[in-house]
Amino acid sequence: NAGVMQNPRHLVRRRGQEARLRCSPMKGHSHVYWYRQLPEEGLKFMVYLQKENIIDESGMPKERFSAEFPKEGPSILRIQQVVRGDSAAYFCASSPPTSGRTNPEQYFGPGTRLTVT
Amino acid sequence: QQQVKQSPQSLIVQKGGIPIINCAYENTAFDYFPWYQQFPGKGPALLIAIRPDVSEKKEGRFTISFNKSAKQFSLHIMDSQPGDSATYFCAARNNAGNMLTFGGGTRLMVKP
Image (cartoon, rainbow over all chains, first blue to last red):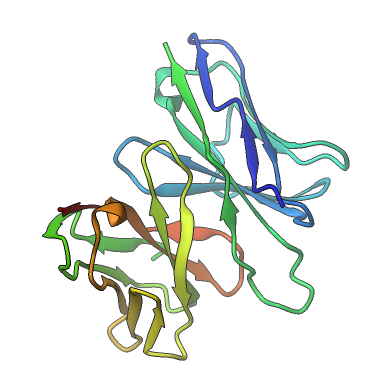
């Protein structure tokens, strides 16, 4: 059973370009979460999605950032017009449906390291 | 109120020692407290987790102690090994949602 997959693992963008980060959840998982980790810091929650729905985007910056989890295919975190401050590691996590259990564990992918030059 | 404070930021112990990492929280709605281990260039991996209805949980060499009244919890690593050298994050989750709130991390080095 493959774990959470993220690609690319490393992404370099110039200021003003767009960054697209992809996340494929574990098999059977329908919940996806995106977190951002700045150097030497803990992870900060960005957004929580289920298939075709954004459940909680309270951690997303109001501008330039968007996320989706379509019916088919991976979840995408999109950053438009990137700035140097967007340089960070972006982690995706997935969890199975709750189905009676509250708050199932989240399993993290290896991350995408975004560098904005 | 969503913060989780973690200490120390870094820790060095000798092989066989028992590093202890502490976390404190304010939000009484938190009801699930996992610890994650992260190696350089990798994603966080779930190590052990506890709910506030128990005061201690052991899994192998890893033990969580939980003090609900003080709103504190800690990770102990028994008989630490150089392979345990990593960054450890505590986290907490609100019973009303699914997002994890992470502490700032502790970089542990276990010397041979």
